[in-house]
Amino acid sequence: MIYVRLLFRRIMSRRCRGKGCSGNESKLPALRPSGSVMKSELCLPYVRVKDARASLDYYEKCLGFHKVSEHRFAAGLPLVIGIERGGLRFLLTEHAGDGAFGICVYCYIDDDVDEFCQRCRAAGGHITQELEDMPWARDFGVTDPDGNVIRFGNRRE
Image (cartoon, rainbow, N blue to C red):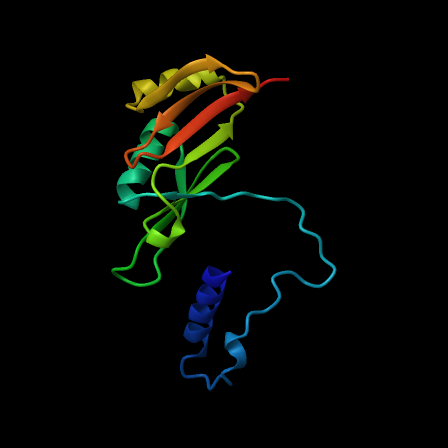
């Protein structure tokens, strides 16, 4: 929520330059109109990284993600890059307060997990858990350059 407030204040300060705004613009508006219903839910895990651009290269090259957004509050401040692969979305963040290094994110995928594991390995992905049949899925794990583990699996029926 703090991030939303700061972003809103920044946007409003840009809109109000030289326009004689009243100062009440810093009040955060309702996120949704009263009575509206959110149609979908989405989880965006923050994946803590030292260098977001270097991590983006790894996630694109080795795991098949692509960049969808980039944000930095001001020059010299930490960078956050939004990435996605199909329905999977992460935020690669340099912000110290956004989490810790070494988290694990579990992802169910639609691709054949055996073929995806081979593609990741061929592209230089650091496979730290080989393919394994688990009660919930057939899966494997990849560790990114910052020690975060991303596990991919095909859900059992």
